[in-house]
Length: 220
Image (cartoon, rainbow, N blue to C red; front, side):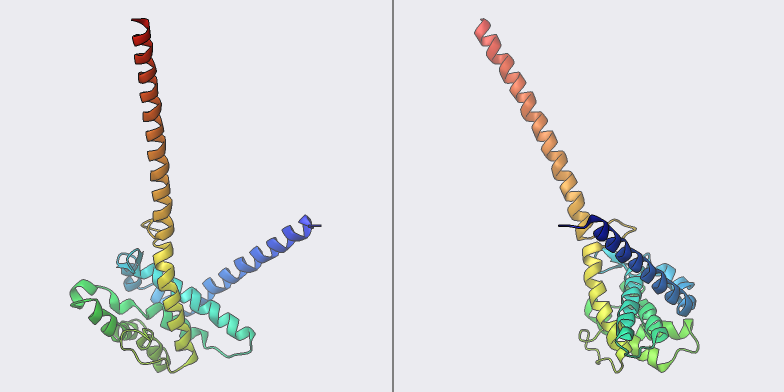
């Protein structure tokens, strides 16, 4: 027999743990990434489209949050992770893609060259940027874009989070622009429902007109 009290308590505990984890992630990103978060570059990132339906800014924050979440999981397994380096690498990994239409000739060049450009931007924002963080940024495209493989655990984390978040960008899209597979599907469903209602009304109207014509013919 189902214990509804137990289930509701368990679900509440799960929700509370998720909320606590989100707060912890937000605090860590704010703490170690404050210079990047306050930069004009990141503000511009929210104005540039990325992965068809998202923005560079939203993608960046998704990568940062996913990277920190992976880091938390590894720490539970007693695996040491340099979270500050992960956050800096995640927040800066795509800043070199800003202005891509004038900076790069095509998508292939952008894919190959933007990691190096991102390192340049990161050095401007963070004068004491470590080589560790620079390597994370420069190698984040692996295994795509002719990139070298990450040479640290933190690099693997950011690279994996980048690929996961790229898929999420396409599915979820932009919260600002209301794009993405889910939103488009929702909009399409709403359009289909409206079309169905319209067609139903047309059929009813036609039926009423037909009935009137039939009555007229009978009465003649």
